[in-house]
Amino acid sequence: MIEIEHVNFRYLNSKNIILQDFSLSISKGEILGIIGPTGSGKSTICYLFNGLIPHSIKGIFSGKVEIQGTNTTQTTVEELSKSIGYILQEPSFQIASPHVESEITFGMENLAVPIEEMEKKLTETLEKLNITHLRYRQTANLSEGEKQKVILASILAMGPEILVLDESSSMIDSTSKINLIRTLKDLNQDGKTIIIIDHDLDFIAQLATRILLINRGEIIADGKPHDVLSNVELLRKNELIPANITSLFYELKEKKLPIKEIPIFFSEAIKIMEGWF
Amino acid sequence: MNYIDVSELSFEYTKNSPLFSDISISFKLGEQIAIIGKNGSGKTTIVKLLNGMLKPKKGNITVSGESILNKSIADIATKIGFVFQNPNQMLFTNSVEKELSLSLFRLKLEKDEHEKRIDEMLKFFDLEKYRETHPRNLSRGEKQKLALATVLILEPEAIILDEPFSGIDFNQREKLIEYIRILGENGKLVILITHNIDSIIENCSRVIALDEGQIIYDLPVSDFLKDDAKLTKIGLEPTNYLKMIFQLRKFGLPQNILMKNELIDFFLRKHLV
Image (cartoon, rainbow over all chains, first blue to last red; front, top):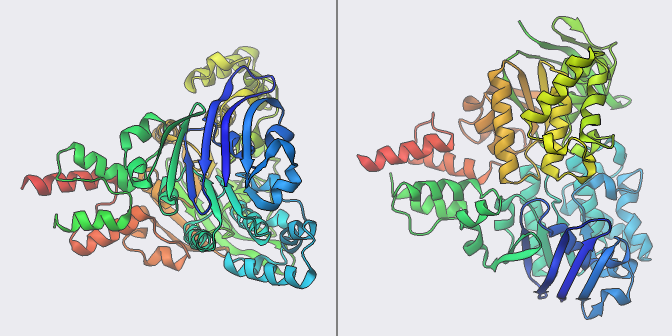
């Protein structure tokens, strides 16, 4: 689905090489969680997917990126946006319309979706994300979390094959996060490929089928969620905050409590602790 | 005595569609308070009313007994510092030093005092080596420190932090927790605006929970988190950590144990017996 081969990249006017001989292969139907400290190169990798690198973001680029068999240097950002939906961390950078309804239909209009289908998708997406009540609101008066949900809706409505969420749950409340997890899992069941960058490892744990840990543009770990997200020492070494339950068990294990495997989920934790009462 | 008093405040973004109707709330110096609520509950609006970015339709806000409704945002900033969620929205100049100087300019201090405060802030936040650096070339964590420094340099008695824990990594979070602790020890009023419930357990003693512009709860953190009923009432799901705590209480975990360190001590004692 996505092939990155031997990519090197340095931003214009910067001495730092962000990606050096970077290769990555993502299969259809994966939910890939990309984690790493700030400045580690996570967002830069995402700019490769949607063609912003090398088309819009200036820098020194070499290597090859293929999305569904198309080399990104031989197509346009507009063309790639039909198959890749990219949701930025900062919703204000992505909102282009004065009203929620027009914001969600904007992308579909550009894809020339017929009006009846557009109306259907608009209603469905609003319902899916529990934001029907925001339909006629002005985007300028929305809270940051509400803006994030509207941007998610506008991207989901376009029905891209690949979804990239770059810290796009950071302002969303806990109830909406659970709803978002459900929605993303449903989309994945329908065959969508999902890539999530997030500092909230609890959120990532509940979704990802594979975890990529990046630091200084290098792959530090690439494995199953449980193996990477329960490795507290590896996470801390890379300036990441383990989920609260995981760090609690790590500390209990350090203090010699009988723990074989450090859990990453609530249900696993309860199963262990039940026996301690 | 209360430092900030909000009395019978009403506010609406759209005519005849009030977000707040007659809400009253007080804050004392030395308190560390979380304002929580789901998206759109009015958290950020209340902060914008406190820092003068929005004006109420009705009611009053006083700081040290003096109304701030007719004061400028710049004047209010010397009493109530506000740190935006996104530090990029707070940085305007082309060097770290100028950023601090610009913030301080409104106090019209003597040159020596002006420079002394800049030096102190650079040292406190470990930004001395970036004195001449353009803020855009700082990492997000460093930008966040600089944004906090531009607020603290005015020595306000109250500091409001909007979602300070989102999108930051381990080291940045540890430092931020440390700053919040130091502010509290120095008798400052610290208000955290957050939807991250886990973060209030370690950092706050009082919770104000909003829903649709109403103050639903104003309680000590331990009372608010006695069970999941209050979170459910304001439309927030407990985090996995809290779900675990609530479940463990059903097995016999004492009600007063909430923080991670308390939980570790409890299990250690239990295993030694």
